[in-house]
Length: 123
Image (cartoon, one colour):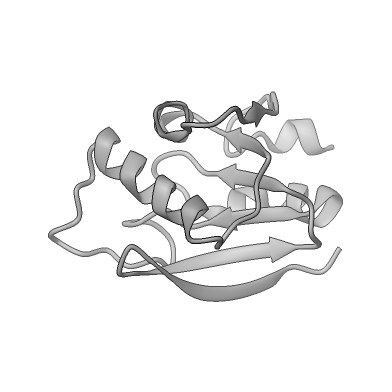
């Protein structure tokens, strides 16, 4: 599946987003990586993978709240702003904690194994 890359504005921040197909899956990278961890999954299953603020090609503002609650608010804006159309999340490490804190409506979590975005699970 072809992966498109774009920059979207989310909560006033420039956010780099990789997207493939129209699968309602949101992939969240861990720390200190970025959305490229999810390329094998995007190619195979589709979905959306943003670079979280402070990582990859997304903005790295000095005044962003880089705490769990700050990322919680960011993820709420990401989903509320319709940048992603996710019904399932595939988070890893720190992103797992943020994603669990962020969702306010029922959202499924896809289990993935291995480090570095769970590449082992995509094989």
